[in-house]
Image (cartoon, rainbow, N blue to C red):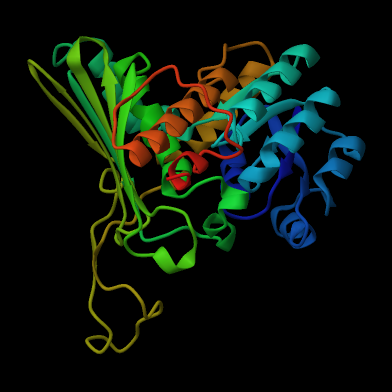
Length: 353
């Protein structure tokens, strides 16, 4: 039984704890969070809780650490885990900058522990099926792959602080879209062009709230990653175009129930009082978005049954592409890859202008 220590007890922590019901050969044995660990542990039946992740890594009986904390804590938590001989599952983005990402990779390699980059969309069944069809040539060799992930804004205030987050929606959700497009294409791009702006949330911080990134691949093929905190209603949509056809997967509208809610005033009772109109509640949302499969894969990697499908090196490459995208948005020019960045945080490339 692999015993996992969870760093973070908010949105990702809850997703991970819920997902463990589908994971074989592992359990969450401890959780660390500065304010909510005790309540989270009691609610989820976790035997140990800590206010400091470093204390958990030192003292808890755990084999691995899953990092679901704010971005500025990823590096320190990973290094502490590696030095203690714990395997690491790290949420996106891997780190705040390329130097930190390289340090995390090196520390885990030196310690002989796994570093799995937690890109859940490569485990989402609908997207995995689309990728399989694309890679088998069902529509010919894809010349255009598009992924859009959008909603009305982040779930926690720290996302608005670029000193903690490292950027805006490009670093938050662009990680998903860029990685997913490259995963479907089966390769990394050779250049990037980006348009970035603040449209809905300009008063909340320096971070951008809508981005469009063009990923240029060999042979004049193109990827498009669109991400938004300025698009209420939600969107998670993947498409691949080939000379013989088109593949489309809509994760928000896929395995979902169609539900219509009348506006307040049309019904005697409105429990939420907020949303009306057509909605599409997803059946077993965590599974459809790949979270239990991601954790199961992490466990299988630790036990030697699988090779990592999403590595620390992948996380570093995604971060490099994001740095180049911020640079492109600042200069208005196409930026070639690989791209060398010494910025303390990715958004610095954009803010420098």
